[in-house]
Amino acid sequence: MTKNVTTVTPATTINEAMKMAATRALAALAREGKTVIVVTHERELGRFFTRTISLRDGTIRADTRASHAPALARVPA
Image (cartoon, rainbow, N blue to C red):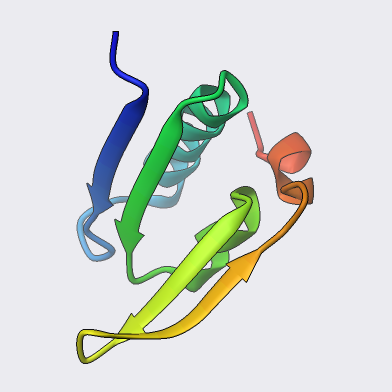
């Protein structure tokens, strides 16, 4: 069984309900100990995860870690 999950969220083709459903599913996998990699243009999704790496022009601009992801508990059902 794999421990890694990678997803790409095309910001222009997903509606809010689908985005939150996908975020809930990914957050659940992260809580199970899986490594979840989300590639998106939507910066606000970073609040649901414990590490966010921001890139610009192929260069790491920020690498932010949190001891927990407080927004995980607030993902709308």
